[in-house]
Amino acid sequence: MIVKSVLLFLAFMVVLGIFGKWRFPGQARLAAAKCPKCQRFCIGKGPCACEKGRR
Image 1 (cartoon, rainbow, N blue to C red):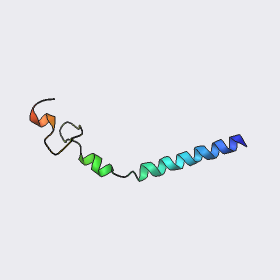
Image 2: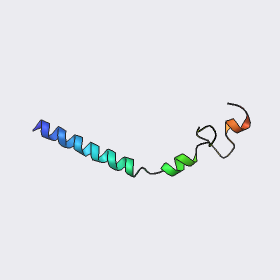
Image 3: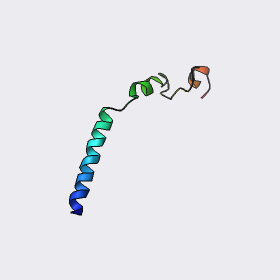
Image 4: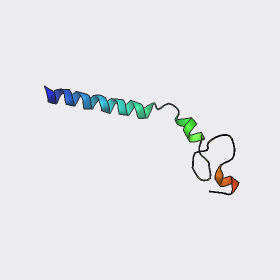
């Protein structure tokens, strides 16, 4: 009985992982927040640190 419940739990976790990867909300917004030159995340509306000349 315990083996059956563990296998059902693992199958449920696999299904959740597949759907979570398939429908992850906000992926486009996260990709747009990266600097095209250095691939770091830009915080705020100003230019990235690599464009200002300091790292």
